[in-house]
Image (cartoon, rainbow, N blue to C red; front, side, top):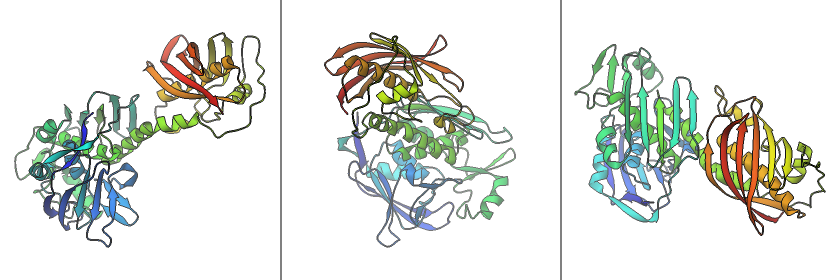
Length: 443
C-alpha cells in the first residue's frame, strides 16, 4: 500500500469559469494527511470549505457542482481529475469565485502547475477500495460496470445521438498514463446544444479557446485535435475527476458506455454503498442486548419455519435472508430463501434489470451458518457474531422468482469459534459460495 501524497508547495492559476464567466484566481495548497481534497471559497466570509465528496454533489447538469448549505463550487471535475490522476490524496483548492478556471477546457494547465509545485509523500498509508463484487448502473443510454482489479483501469465508449462520433478508448490510470493519454483532452459540445446552454445560463465563459464545437460532421477548434479520439478521452478525464468523489482511490476496471456527470456521480454513490456495507453488515450481528430467547422447538430432521428462525436469529425483514430450514443433520443444514420481485433491494439493484446482490447471498449463508452454530452450541442467550468471509465466489446471477437453496456445513469448531463452508444454489446450479467464520458471545 502506497503512502498518501500532497503538494510540496502552493500552485496557482488564474482564468475564467466556463459556465459562470467569472474571473477567478485558484491556488492549490498542501494539506495534512487524511484530510482529503476540499474547496475553500476565500471570497466569502469565514472562508467556508466544501469537501470533495459525493455526499456534497448538488447538481450534475453539464458539470459537477458541490454545495454545502448556501456555499457552492461549480465545475470541479477537471481540477479533481488532475489531483486524482497524479495520486494526490490531500489538498485545499482555494478560489475567489464560485468556479475554478476552465483554462483550455482540459486538465493540462492544472497538471503543469502541480508538476511545477512538486508532489511529496506523507507518513500515513493510503487506503484504497476494491469492489467485492461487480457494481452496475444502467441509466437511460448509460451503462457502467466496475469489476475488481489490481489497479484502476477505464474502458469507455462515447457516442453522439447520430452515431457520427462514436469513439472507444481503454487505459490503466497511472500518473504517467493520466498526464500523457487523458489530461490534454478538451471539453466539447454540439452546435445545436449551444442555444439551449445559453438559455439555461451556462457556458458564459465558453469559446473555441476552451472547448471544441461539433457542427454536423465538422469539428470547430482553434488547433488540431490533440488525440484522434479526443472526445472519448475527455469523457474519461471527467470520470477520473468524478470517481475521486469517493474519497479513496479505486482498484477496479470500470467499463462505461455513454457516461455523463449525472451517471458518474450516481455510480460513485453505488460504489460508496458497497464500500460502507461491511460496516453495516457487521452491525447486524451485534444487536442491542435482550432477554434470553424462548426455547425453540424443531422437528426431528431439524426443519424450522420462519417464526422459529426469528426466535433464534436477531434479523428481521427486509434483512432476514432465510425463509425456512429444510433440514439440519449434524454439522449440515439446508435452508431456503424465496427471492421475490417485492424484495426491498430490487428497487435500486436494478430497476430495469433486477439482480439479487451477491453480498446478500453471502449474508444468507452467514445467517444460516449462524443457525447451525447456535444449535450446535445449545447455549442460552448466545449470539453468533460474523468474523470473516474467505474464498467468496459469485458464479451466476439470481433473479426474481428464483428459489435460493443455501447449504452450509460446519467444518471446524474450537471453543466458541466456528468455521462453515456455504454454497448457494438455484436448482442444481451453484450461484455463489464462501467460507464464513463466527464467534459465539453473550447477547
